[in-house]
Image 1 (tube, rainbow, N blue to C red):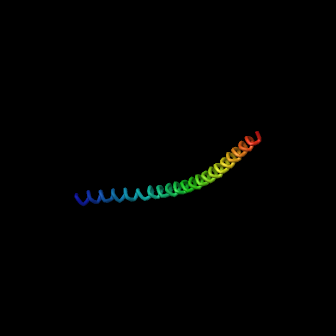
Image 2 (image 1 turned 135 degrees about the vertical axis):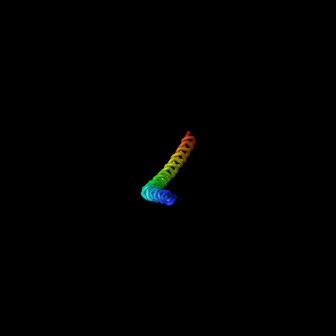
Image 3 (image 1 turned 60 degrees about the vertical axis):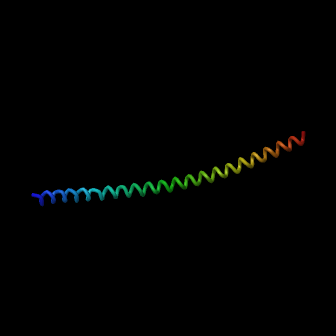
Length: 77
């Protein structure tokens, strides 16, 4: 009786372990997809940072030119 019970328990445990494999494969696929998405987002963010830096430089240039023009206008008065 004990052998039969142990064997049934072992069979159930083996079935449960076997069922885990496909779930792990699915998780692996999801992790790969998540990793690719994260890499893509990092590239997008890097591009946005570059654009913001460029825009900041342009604004600084325009502000500098505005101050110079204002100073020049004051000299002309």
